[in-house]
Length: 183
Image (tube, rainbow, N blue to C red):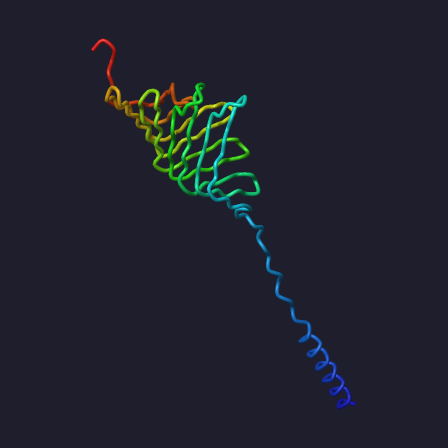
């Protein structure tokens, strides 16, 4: 009886061993991350912004990426022209790159930003500028330098607020070389 019992036990053990060996745990399904890259890539982009049928801003850039959030990234040089009421270019802007943030409706240009105001003959240099098309305001928290070609004045500071034509500006923390009336 012990022999039969042992053979039965061995048979059960063998069946369980073979059965359990067949029950291998499947590797966990690889989790795929959602795609966060650009949905569109557009070459030779020109963006026109107008008010009441009059062209106010024209932007040119060689490359644009558009994302699911409707944000846009301009990884190459950005050139912008701001037009005055006479429909002539008053101000130009050049930057290494830029982006449009859809949720806050603003543009940011970055890297070696140079703004030239043709009416006042002034040049502005800064590493970054923001433009809000709704408020028509341009601003930065970064260092700025403004050179006046007519008077040889140099105004420097940190932080800038201006209108989109750059005709009136306010530098928050100023320093520089400039003339004082009456001297």
